[in-house]
Length: 108
Image 1 (cartoon, rainbow, N blue to C red):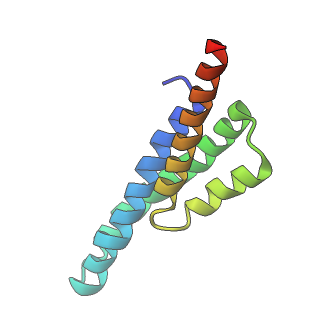
Image 2 (image 1 turned 60 degrees about the vertical axis):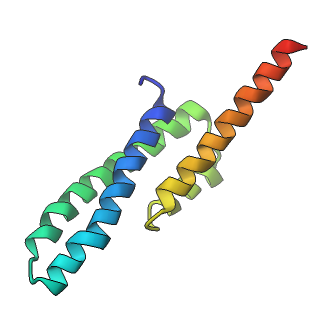
């Protein structure tokens, strides 16, 4: 797991899940069941993961030589509930395409 892009993908998955838990479980508990402690706990976890997400973007961007547009895309993805998962899928497709291209070049 020394690859910063792999590390970013793992952090992005955790951050995305924590955001969904915050929106889908903790917030309804706060407003429908009058239990604000759920938001405090999950919100703190999500906040920590969001900071790790931003740090992971920096490491992945340096390692992968990401463009400014790619960095902004990763940041914007974190704002939308399913954004990190969609961005991860894009990274996965690009990695697969890159591996296929590298393999095809090796055959020739």
